[in-house]
Image 1 (tube, rainbow, N blue to C red):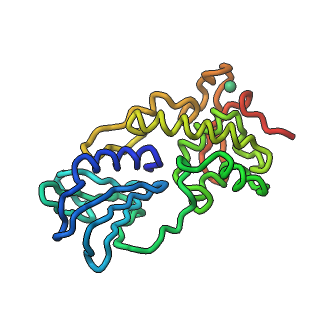
Image 2 (image 1 turned 135 degrees about the vertical axis):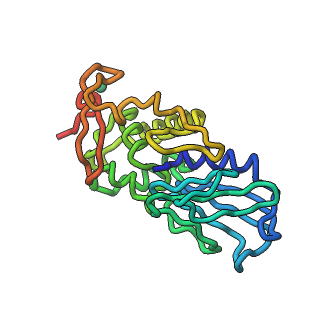
Length: 241
Ligand SMILES: [Zn+2]
């Protein structure tokens, strides 16, 4: 599913093509991203609201001028370009809403001290907390595994025990590298122009079960944490007793 780097990739491409165009008479002024949500802000109301919120769920896609198919849920016809929203599994949403987002702060914009404050009093395992979009928004299964490996943190470590500064540094460097590579394409992510991401070539643990750890050569392990497939190096990410 699209996580922060994939959604940011989509936002950057759409900004280049759609800003300033009109939809039903209202001008598209800004495209912002918060966590995994995209926010389209218009100069005038459409159906009574100035903001369109896109949450892509598991399989939602936004493509420019693509031919609609049986999975297409909506076509937004701007002056020059059509934005085509399709979703095979239909967990995503396009919603006109002026309401505040019910999401935690965007993790890429979150200062390390604030991340530390949010985690410091929690005994729950770090991985499910980082997947909780109400606590911090933007990470999904791929990037949580990559960030915890980079920070040498076992996914089951109680949040209060982790080095939040190391985690924050890992999150920033990995997400920025992933954005620069246009996101990760495991099976079905393509940007609005139909281009795949390249960051999957730099994954160090995700999807690499049985292969040697790039740091220490121990075999990468796949296990389940909070019902999610989880990849880690048992040597680099020991679980403290
Ligand atoms: Zn290792």
